[in-house]
Image 1 (tube, rainbow, N blue to C red):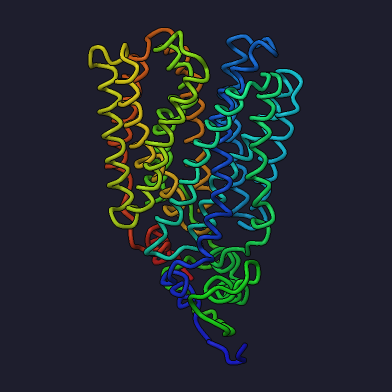
Image 2: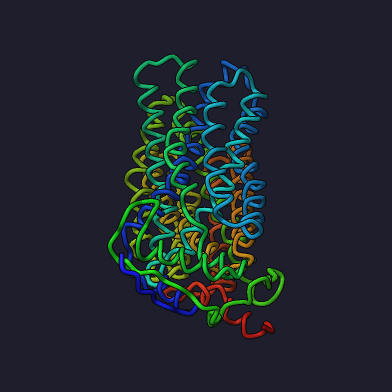
Length: 482
């Protein structure tokens, strides 16, 4: 290693991060963060199948079944708010990895449940971990990403859900088809959720505090310089990686990052322009999750309504096909286009096509009597949910707010999404009984149209901007005395 030093201002250090090419380091961040979302999607899917098998074993009534199917997103509300708040107080690193521990411990304990109450408690643990993982993974990835690739990298974290959905339906199908007794199958289904979470706990604990937090909140110039070197030069946690500044010591001066809020000064989410942004990120996340989780959590019931004589295995295989052919490609199409087309346009396209497909199922005669016609339209809705707002709301939440309140802004947005997921999971089964599949899809069309309108009114386009520009931190900094 050379002994010479590169003396840069904090503003230049931000430029090093913003202009750095995508490297192995970034993809390791994506993997480390994304495995939480793999677990998240796996758990959300598998609980519906597991509780179906559990109903005669634990003698569950309709109310208990509804509570178990909806408790994960309800508990996630608390997790998102708690982790979002503490990320802004004690830092991203101190919180990162705790949510993965909760996911792993909750999955193992849930697999060992002995009655309804114990299963409910352990699912709440998983739900808190899910809620905590959403803002922490989003913010950590966003704060390490460059301006030209931030949408792709943050989106790729969320897109790991697609693999989790496929894995959940595949595991359920294999266990059911193999003839494993139901008393064992449901425990294996829930227990497997611990595997991906355990795989990244160590990596999450090794990630350094983000440089935007160390400088923007703590005002620690030297640590910020060391972390920038770690991120764009050498990587002690992961090994040496090419790209950026090599074999050099970076020292920094407190020259002030242009457009940064002075260290120790916190923005307020209730002030302009952040309140409108919060309404946009939280509101659209709330609306898409009503449609997404309402349909996905209740999809076995929807298929059972359409095909009352079909088996659980046949319905699980249909869902596996939908997730593999429609949902998974939708996730990665959004990742590919996020920094080309832009968040706002993709989100708007998704909401509008969701509106059309849900309305078609609700209004076209015969769709709800023809299983395969329904499946085609239902799959199309899943593609555009994943290509559109299910992906973009996660990216938006991680980049719309200044560093000092980014965790809380993202946490509130995520918690509103989980509240929407809770309402969708709770309300779809009774609505299905009262209004049928057409009634459910009609309601989802209205929800999707509202999401499109809110996207137009409340959200800007951050494509290609630095995180300070995208979050309006520069605008706030100009109004803040130093």
